[in-house]
Image (cartoon, rainbow, N blue to C red; front, top):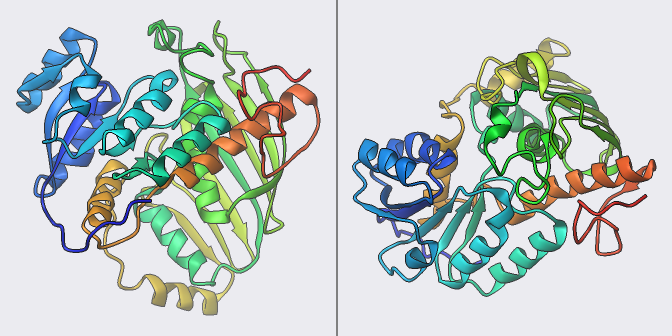
Length: 365
């Protein structure tokens, strides 16, 4: 990873590539930090969307050429919000051009591709920050502080539920629902957030058994999945997700020796308060109160992730999300797909000897 000189507090210039979720990056991530970032260019192949987003935010520079942005020395950050199937080539090209890179999830479509990106990072002038905005908000950050302080104790079990609804009109967008362009279904595009949140709090998995199916929509990729995990710390975790829930919720419930945590059920902001933080006894409650007694609000989603990214670029904090974090999340995806195809439990780490390492879309039966 490239070193960052401390005290570089300048405003960083940003080019957004892909104005769908890219618009949310502007609204939630960059506008709240107008003293830190300036979006100077946008890129999209859809002319109407390009014009609409440019007009809405007063961004004069609009282009359909990704390559054009790479040669512009006035741009510090390339923010990639394009369909997943082209993330790999765009991330590698932006790093090679000396840019800092922000990339939406999934970072790419296989562990081999992630490892290609991580190799490119080693010689890059800029740094890569994958997006995992659900890590941010008062609820999850309080839980993280309590766990890191050693108060929660031994991890026992957890359940993670991603119960969302996606109807046929969602899949009318040409690249969605297809292995070639979306790279996967509910595991890759939706539940990836919640599964990353769980591992952010409970650490990595050691063994995985999973099942996937397409039951809700007439699409290629899966829209239902479940998995049973043995974590490295010995805890058991169950994952369940569907895109056919008539009431949309996201829920994490984590049971530790001294504390039980339960997230809000808001589907797209599960990191926000109110989280249930249930202490085993009054002594544990007092310890929790001391640890979070000086709490300062943590804005949810992109607002805090982008703020912390600028702090890193200024030499004032760690990179909030790394390619290693993205790899861990995609390693879990790979293991679930491999287990579902083979009917067998899959041990982690998943490496080049796995039939899914180079492409998790390859059948193993």
